[in-house]
Length: 144
Image 1: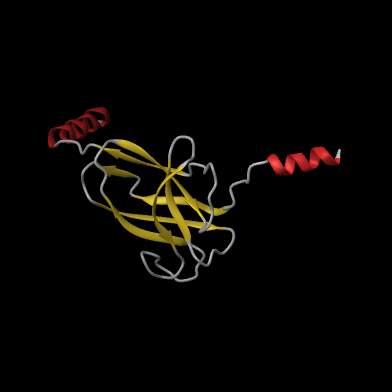
Image 2: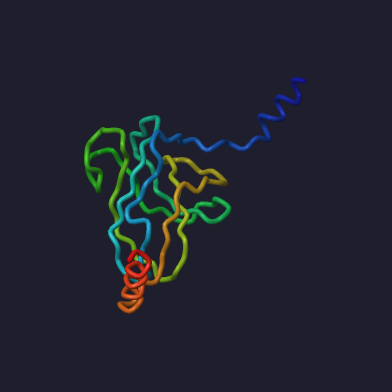
């Protein structure tokens, strides 16, 4: 019995460490390809993280691809209120291709094999003026 308990401890993968009181949120959730966009990200973890939290992109398997910077609670870098428990950051992003960016967060020093996808950021093509007019016309037609 002791052997199986020890074997379970040795072979088990570490679990994802950050528990959130309020989920990761990002504004806007849709980006236009090849346009620079100001993005605001924020989350409220259960525990205080003095060095902040990394906003990261992960692939479909949860593998860390790139960092977008540190969400802080210092009242700087886009964090609106110091030490309110909400970690946030403003940053600029330009994406060249249409895709979905899977986002997660990590504490400094964390290196898990798999991170959960907490939120998707979608990159689309900006609609043309005629496409927007067609959408408006459809709304008028459907409600009138």
